[in-house]
Image (cartoon, rainbow, N blue to C red; front, side, top):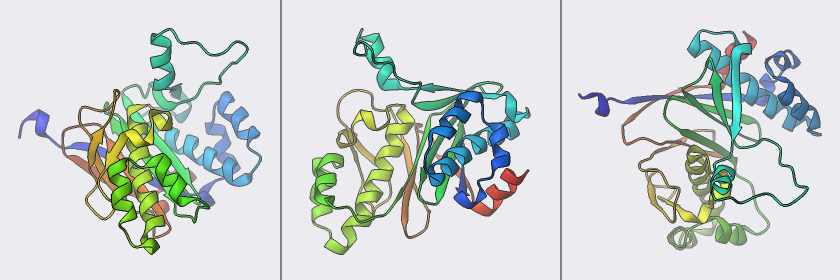
Length: 259
């Protein structure tokens, strides 16, 4: 086996919102604490706290440093692309830092992605290879057909409409999770355009089929994750190598959060 064909390791941690605790606030930096205080709903505070705290604890464990030494920069690839073309925000508009968290300092070289929905927070990690993770709670939407028109490529819409009506809601969120995981891995996020990305049908092995326009990855490994029957989740790793995936369930993650 050559080095280029050796499997690439990626790890996923599932965390349940019941693991959120005020003692984890010590792991947040000042800007993260300020953002934490702006959330009005307790559920939003819990998910934000778990995502930031878990990221630091996992990276500290991998790098052998104290969690306080793990730092992040938020980078939005869409904004960076606009800046390179000379585009500017409207006068008087000041955007807060946003985008994908990129480890710096002691954790430089690691790649992370965090997603949350409902009772779950999920973290994905890889070394020097972009990753994106997404989890979506399956919920009845008022205008599912309208959402499908916004999110699904033409080929995906055809396959989706051919499904039994009872299966369409879960399938839609399966499509969405796969596509958003890919967009997050590239750093574009939802601003990259969900319809530009076409993936395999939710009942087939997860694969990236096509990417319209610029900004797409040269290669991508894609896999569904198991968040239970009420959720759809996916992991994208931007590599042409096979990925050796390790998944830590919520009980093991709770042990890490408890220290």
